[in-house]
Image 1 (cartoon, rainbow, N blue to C red):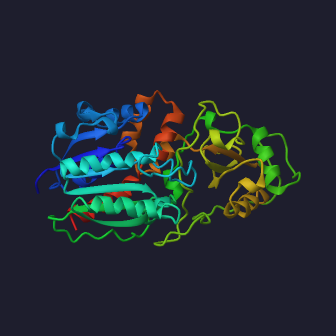
Image 2 (image 1 turned 45 degrees about the vertical axis):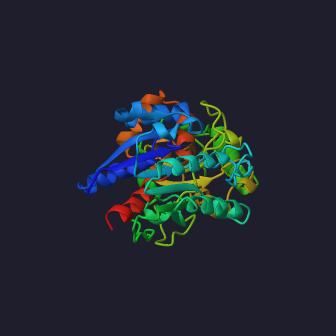
Image 3 (image 1 turned 120 degrees about the horizontal axis):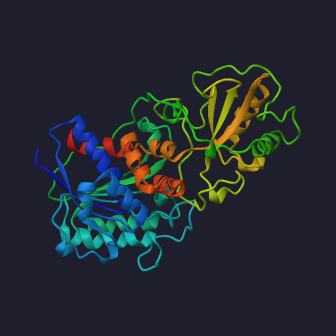
Length: 394
């Protein structure tokens, strides 16, 4: 198999290259070379250089300023264009050409396709791109790409269908140059083998845990009234909580009934110091609810909560009953703790391997907010792996 030349735009820390590298490990005949990558965010650039130092000299900072005539030729072009103005959690400003939104940068991609004529161009974006609101813009984009001599296929894929327990739906569109023959089909969901507990760290620093006062407020908000409690480590009376081998699902995967976490988002990571759990814009949405027993070194139970705050209305309905049951079932000597997910955990839920995470943590100086943002902005490596596997192997 000849070496595949790749250019990634809106690269981030480059999930695409992580997926290709993993594919190369599993199938030694696969060879690739990153001829260039385009990213404007300083922290993402630092992470990319930490994981792929061999490609640091091939960086192009601003896609709007790239002279494509001076870029080496490549076979594959990937573009995970800005989603802030299309995402349901973003500005909803749209991506119309000339609108000036960040998502409108996608139109810079046409210049690349027109000049470089890659064999395959691969789009990734939020599923809302194919919603009723933005479907006209998506159809317009697809027609523009195909008018350059391509044929495109698109599908919404969910990470939880590919053994990553995160409910993350994303649009993937593959555009094949008309002279390229391909029997490509999008990968089918696989049988899951992991649940979210497999992605959590065992020893978490105290800075990620909320104070006992905050946890008490949280527990009171769950019930809407005072409950039997002591001041000792948020200790609550009640009955023995049974260890559950499989946590109650928050979402159902088409390929199984394993528990999955809510979508990791990139919005609003402003502060390094976490003061409380109630200002939702400042912190990661997902929190870990833990049950500890006095004298234990690790939690005896974990659950993932979406939008944990002092108001019942901010907590997703699928969490409320689970949380109430956990608190009611505590016996003497057991207590709950509530914490943020760590950057390492979030990156694991994006399919990033621990060795790469450690490089990124070292390069970032452990500035958590920057890594949270990068995780929320990225693509789950495992989904890309199966797409690339169908392209190259199957």
